[in-house]
Length: 210
Image 1 (cartoon, rainbow, N blue to C red):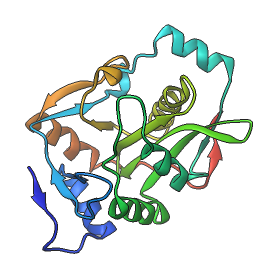
Image 2: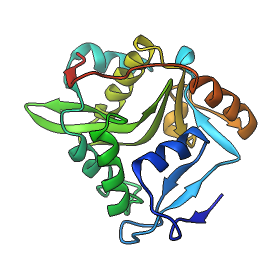
Image 3: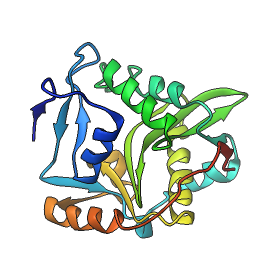
Image 4: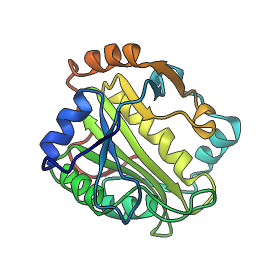
């Protein structure tokens, strides 16, 4: 589904309703102020009970190279996700998306998991929470393994807090290493419906995970 939003005002409340129906927004480029709704025929999800940690990543987690924090620098994480990176010269994160997700963060429905080293932000990810679902949006690394360790921390927290769905939107070769799979739209809708019946609380206040 690809539909322009220029006939309606996009608010955080409308955005949450869209997520609850299986839609999420994207933009064509950072310079394009418009966003459009996406509803893939096949959806990427990371089953929380089948999360796979490669041996090299498990070693990186044991080394405690990063200080992992939650919600201490949300806007900086979004900025990091919008940076050019190898294989990604431009971003879909435009000003409208920055503003909307910043507002979602302020009302407790968007969160960041951050990797810090020597008080410098070196990686992270962010996404949206609604009931028992976490909708992953983007991740970035400025040092090897930084975002991967954040993903491990995210899954740990989702399991602890009773979440039942981790939506990755799309499946990439990178995410497949952790157990991400594609499922048909109808299967996703059933999982989403189940998640919307679960009361899960991602966080009450900014904390450090480990």
